[in-house]
Image (cartoon, rainbow, N blue to C red; front, side, top):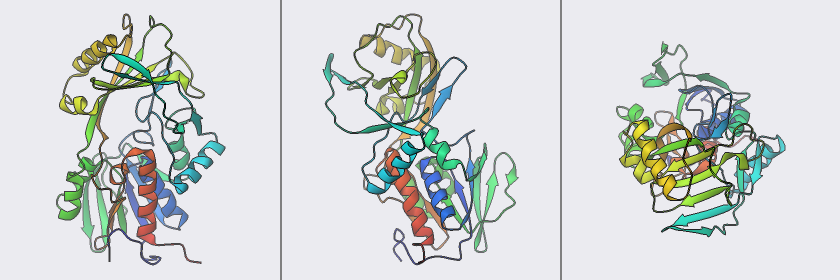
Length: 339
């Protein structure tokens, strides 16, 4: 059996553990549940959505992970229509510019961009509404017990339930840690993903004059993206900017202190014309922010041990890739719905 193809409807898999509540994990779990499977999700963070994240304080909120998403595949376009209909996503039409070699220019991209509303994590919360999710639970070990799986959790020890199938919907390096002693082929796939970090700066710049753009791609600098969060629908609070570090620079400097990373990014920001005086800055390091297989395989299914992998890194990157990866893995696990 080809490990990445669907079989007939599998009625033997009744209980599945999904590790990771990003878009891929939520998509996979939702579709499995719609096919009558009992699903438990384990997520190490305090909430769903993964890198579609929003940081909140009493004074402001800012999207500090994925900044927007596109919808090209018909199945994802249909899902996004539902998000828009339910008020958790909207089209974003930013004034876009490009900075390169000391010069600013217009960005003429005609691609339709979407954002979550009122925050980037809203679609993930929508997908999570009817799912069983245990937050702040880090799965540290998987163990086969006959034909089932036992899970070990850092916070509470051994999970009491046994599972017919396990889905790893987490970044490739984290999946690799769990797979090393289980499956060499799957471990080789995760090791080849070459994921990179991203230093992210969230800033309030009280002295910055009004700009003639909402967001900009910054090329050949240590910064790669800047965005005025208030340009997105339904954002509230103090006007905030999100600044993403260049992936290569971020990876090379992943172990910098927050203070050192901030200093370098602020210097770059000032060099492209921002007034950084009296700025109030919050830093975040995404250790696994970007990267994908050179040749996407969409998902990976190991039917001999009832384990599967999904995530944007298997499906070309991007939010859409994560959603489709989870959906396609769910269909491969159970097979098509019976008429």
